[in-house]
Length: 184
Image 1 (cartoon, helix red, strand yellow):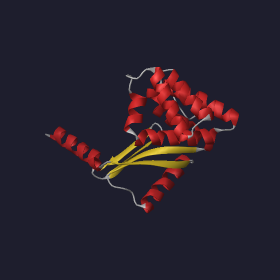
Image 2 (cartoon, rainbow, N blue to C red):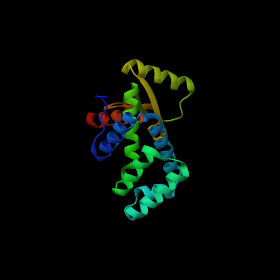
Image 3 (spheres, one colour):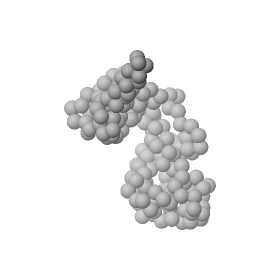
Image 4 (cartoon, rainbow, N blue to C red):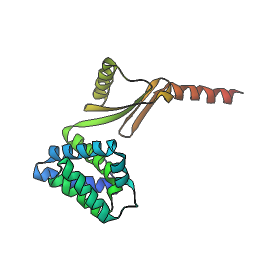
């Protein structure tokens, strides 16, 4: 886990939760609960607003998030963690805390995640080939977080940890355009 860097306030919260979950033998169940909560935040504009908006008081956020946790049947360590975050007026950082926690879990399992941006959806063959190539490069099991962005025109952009490879057509065209300006 030495190569996994989570920083800032969200990283400290995620690290504390990870250590508690590891001691309790509940790393996977806490991750499952947090993943479920993260999906709920992504699907509900109202819940996302509750999490991100400073307009709500700590009491209002705590009351609302407690109701959401009850409905989602999230309790135990994950539930108590989210309530503590709300009580401390740090709910706005919850999505980052969840992603930092997931990064710590992945590091413990010897996995890593690459953010991949493509112009069009990847076929299963290309997805598998990219996953295999990155696994060979890193020596770890690589999960792909694929985003489709037609504005890159073609190619792909891969971000893995602190490394980034931009092989997009848009970047190549911009480089050619810049080089041609210098020739004049």
